[in-house]
Image (cartoon, rainbow, N blue to C red; front, top):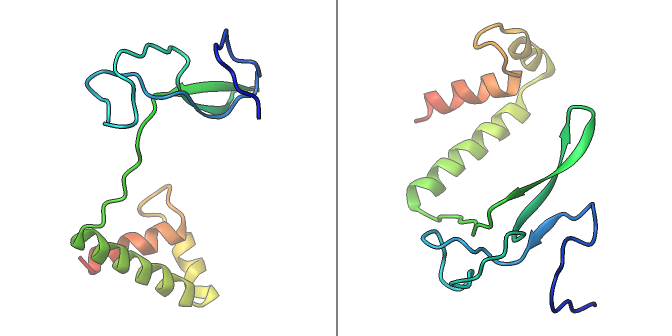
Length: 121
């Protein structure tokens, strides 16, 4: 493993993942940033397709959260039951959902889940 003491720039043109720590004052989380740090290259890099080529985009660093609230856990259970109900449908019923025209632009699964979640609120 190489230890870099001072970075002059990105070494690779295909770098992806998290680089550095967040350096935004006011949006900093305790323990994940350094107050006064001013690293313009810090962030999360992603490789994205741009028209006919690939490019790199940089996002600010963030700390993902996964709240375990009681209402959220109940709703996750309802959603999981909806997925199981979709998987239990026969092929003809799934094809009927795929052929529906309203709401437009949705797959059969999304149409089914929309209806299922509205019925089970």
